[in-house]
Image (tube, rainbow, N blue to C red):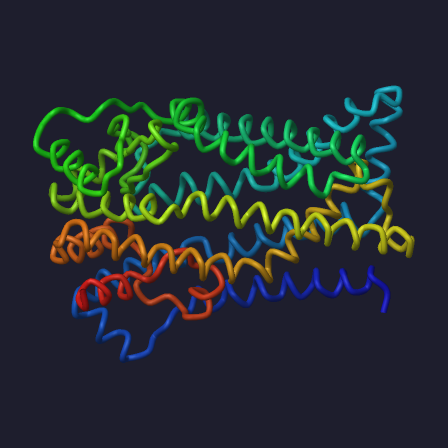
Amino acid sequence: MNLRTTILILYFLQISFTLVMKYLSYQGDNSPELQDRILKYFTNTDIQNGIEYGRRGFFASILSEILDFILTGLFVFTPLSKRLENYLATKTKDRFYLTVVLFFLVFAFAKAVLSLPFNYYFGFVLEHQFGFSKMSFLDWVIRTSKTLVLTIGIGILLGTLAVFVLKQFRKTWKIIIPVGSLLLSLLFTILFPILITPLFYDYKPIEEGSLKNKIVALCDLAKIKVENVYVINESKYSGHTNAYFTGFGDNRKIFLYDTLIQNHTEEEVVSVLGHEIGHWSHNHQLKDITLSTIETALLCFLLGYIFIKTKEENKIHLNEIHSPSTVPFLFLLLSILSSFSSPVWNSLSRFQEKEADWEALVLTKDKKSFISTEIKMAKDNKSRLNPNPWTVFFYHSHPTTLERIRMAEEF
């Protein structure tokens, strides 16, 4: 069996697997035992709200996935990608990097056009329908435009940089790209709150008072120095709740959604922050970046090998590995490989979330607030309380609400 046939089979298997997992996600877990455990903390209305929100736009999500697969398939298994590169090279008079930028722009634009109706349906129509979104249509257009410009701009910049490395360092790119991804990850972590967050949110330092004092005391107890605590104006856009840490060393910052402060007691907010402190205490962010760098290095060697073998067979329309028309092929390979690696990453993520939960309980010694927080956040966000075990294994980065509550009960 040649590599083209193997890749094509894996491509269709990935489509089938995605559709099966969508169906399992829709079904959830309706076992009576789970239902009884859920009813210890929630009502039937809470369960139904989570089911309805989890199932929102089921057929639209399937159509979106299929269209995305078809677009990628057209670029990989037909001469389309190669012809587009040749056409753009003619128009740019063989100016290579201009051709690269234009190719990426066309490819990204095609994906954006396909996804835009679904983004509107999921991000605006259904979020209003379920009582989350507070954005006007104009707010949504502005926010979506910012996201598209930023995503496409950064994507083209990084893609062109990757092509430059592939072209200029043909023997060492497998080392340079992982090291570069490591440095960019560290840089992005520092710059995100400075450059990206202000583009989408208004935020300000938390007001002096009891809550700030409790947060500072918790950070002192955990021996974590925090530059400042900020409150994000999420209520302007939605009713979702969240909190997170960002930055390194003396540049650490805490961001709280104002919806979290509005919907929870001070003790519950402190419990949420205890969880975030747990991530810092266990160096989860640095561990993730390190493991991601190792994975990137392995993928580079694997992609390089598969590309050479596939090009030798000459059954898929491929130029050089640094050619822009090769990018969709590499994207497809990465997508297929991620189907195998994502369960590993998600299992690691769930383990880290459990570690952070445990740290929150150790720091606050307040399992009552921890449990009430989990219950409120599940209700506020209409979380699926009875997810299918297989979708949890393959896709969930966090333990289920019941698993987190059970751990707290046993603390």
